[in-house]
Length: 156
Image (cartoon, rainbow, N blue to C red; front, side, top):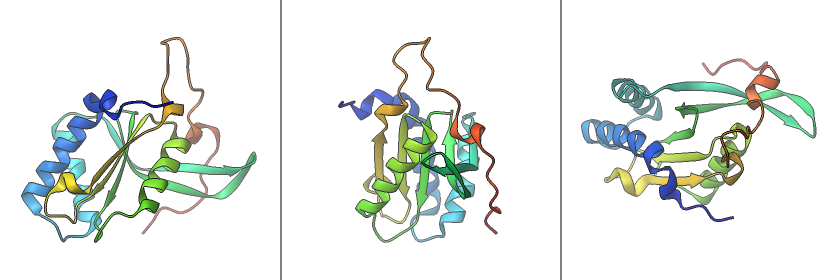
């Protein structure tokens, strides 16, 4: 099933606007953690709801693992944002974003690499067709992080 990524422009656009502001102010070449803090500030300034470092439990064939993934940001319960500050995005980064979309059931994702001269050259937008609710009365079910408890320690 093909879904045009522009379908979610109203959800991803404000996030990209916040990221552009951070990049305009700081430029490339800093640590990912710095861009994360500044992006969170810009999202809050725009009154966008988000959670940072949400622990997402991982299960394998119904077995809860003693591991979890910490998603960088989930904005408005719709958009997974993965922040990078690397030389170049590789296909594995886009594959990871697709995995994160699947396990969070979010319909849209942004992979944002701040380590580029022009921010939009470091952006990949992905759509998760399995995360899209077709009708108002349909629900994708409980969020995966509501099903199990993540037992790993937060990153230091």
